[in-house]
Image (cartoon, rainbow, N blue to C red):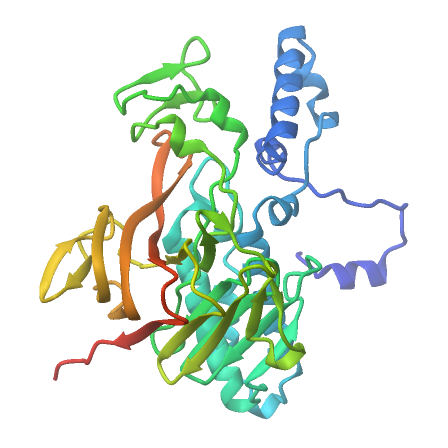
Length: 421
């Protein structure tokens, strides 16, 4: 008859002491390691197989542990720690205020597939992360309605030693990473239940060493004789070029700034709870950056203390749910110049709309002075059962202008579509 462990433990004597290790299927031990370590581990496994002792002793050949995924992918760690923070808020909420909906949204945000990556897309699949963030954003709104937070607060959410500044107004929330980039790592629209900062940077993967740049989707090479397992099979869902697997040198966040192509480093201009002013470290060309929330608008104002000959640019990476599908489009001067999966360049721009069917809304970008506008899809490369594939993670917008005015304001206005009766 089945019994709970506590019942068995209460009625039977202890037979000894055992501590269970962290275990999973053996391929996970490789996937969770950093690229170079994973390569070393894979070589060791191959040596063991060639020597004939692998099957008998593989239990002692261990790689990494599951939680290494949080070290490997900052985006996974951020999502996980955001979930834990909201779980704690729900736990301390008086029982009379808790609802089944809150508990359900917490459970939805804990769906594990979006937090790691193996033979299937996992963390690399935007729709999986979007489902988690949708639940987190909805849960946060429910908790705020019962137990309001300060409109601004500072904490080290992801426990990486660098604090983040939160600013919210009940409609939008902007989270600024207080590192040298002073960029926005999360931008939530509560009405749309969406995080526009839900992007993924490119980084080195151990299986990239199997990729032969320029191979076409029809290519299919097996590394073993006979029927190759899904783990050993090498095939291409998309053509992969050398530039597709280059690791990013910066976070794929919102408002990453450069001067003549060189990253600008910032320091906080004021203290803790009002930390939305930043000053560039370059004292020769001081630049001030001010982040503001106004109703359904995010405004980032740049102030230059002197006119400069340099070109200033800011990179805005937006998670648009339609990605490179049919549901996403740019709207400019009454026309549609292309979709999110296409490259677009416009000069003298002051306004453009990113309209998204899957989102059920749009983002209107405005600038207080004309800028040169570049847009392109940001892809990452991962492996799947179908082979190596390119997955669109974000729409990357680059705004560029010569520093000829003392101030430029970039506005992102986020709108939900009106529901037709």
